[in-house]
View 1 (cartoon, rainbow, N blue to C red):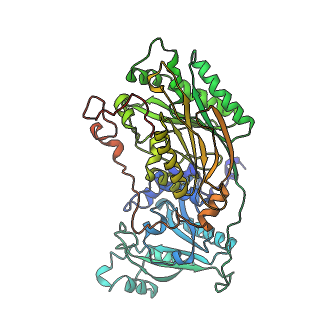
View 2 (cartoon, rainbow, N blue to C red):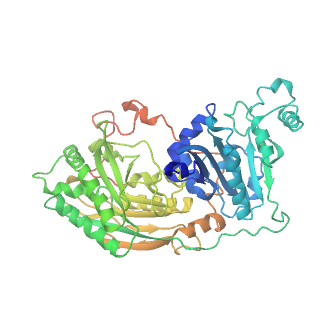
View 3 (cartoon, helix red, strand yellow):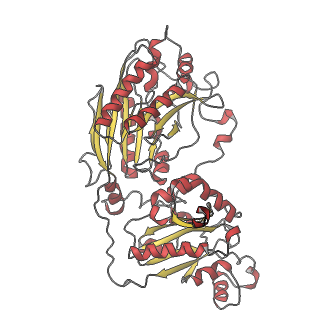
Length: 545
């Protein structure tokens, strides 16, 4: 028998971040009449509760996907709509102490229906609920034939009753009933985009027969340990003779952090400005940015090589980079120890960056997968926009790195206070890294002010003042601390306050405009400095948040 014949054709397993693109393609094939997921939403579903997301692959092709999360009975059995119950599609309302498993996505490739893919995915959910001693499984079920029979019935409840009596046929309801689910009522305006179901859904539930539903709930989240060691480099600007000398200086701190077995090291925003110190003359702001952007390929390769060599994840501060469309963006290169390189553009250039350097803002922000879980990067000024951090956390990020470059204490405190707020409101860790010192021949680095730090939420498991560690002001140093990611999970589920769980999803949401990247140039962030942009006050410095 050949190896090909011995290999199983069908694989059911937990979804992984690498499946995101294939899942998005599957959903588009399965639900052509409904809005597609963004990759960020699928990332959030998997990152927020990986145990509750499953995929089916047939002959190597992803043909099935289901997503679920744990919820408290009060929320799971309430009459909420799909957006509200799922945290706008990210699965961010997952409660690790919840006693119900809530299913909010189930799709099977139309080309493979009849192979019982859906039934197998339902069995995975049921097995998970039994393994965790959950009360049961609940979800809002579609009624795709309702619109076809709308004039023949007296409403959604009558339609459901006729389906139960066998007088009308609905393939989705029939499938769910055949899998042991029972209707608990009609959900109004559950999914407005579902025209076939007239926006209605049936609240379907399966109760776990192996538990006593009347017994007191005992689900608690143990105070576990999921330790990650973080190093933040407060880097001093100094004159260097050439590119190699600059990289040796960076490598020194990477080496030290690796000796301390750190999982991450983060460098400051625009830490590569030192490369301007060996120019023959002081360059104008525009000349300086143009000169720096030419180093991009070498910077990426050097940081990636270091990440592999020293077995550490490097958040490479930020570096001016010329993009394919000719614009200059301020980009953080995240070089992981597995050899992969990710990038995160600064979304909001400061007025100084936009005016003096003609830096444009990026159009997307996403969590980055690492071997220590998803992380996010907010470059300096971006930390002052709460919706960006919230999007990263919705996608599953538990650590947000903030490389910054500030020339005054006022600028630094803007970033610092906002970073602390992001840690509290998102119940995550925020790590700041800034430049110190000065470069007399580099107009952008006249003076610097920084006090790098590792910030925490404010609750019992964390440091008394919400600061895991901080550097001495304006001194070049490496600050290292261990953080426990399990403390975040505990705080989100059982903390004194539960900011993420207590959000009013019925009142507000953050919605990313997918059209921004394709808008005409004159409508995008960061106008050319010779346009109507107002000239900022002060010298051509980063300005600091």
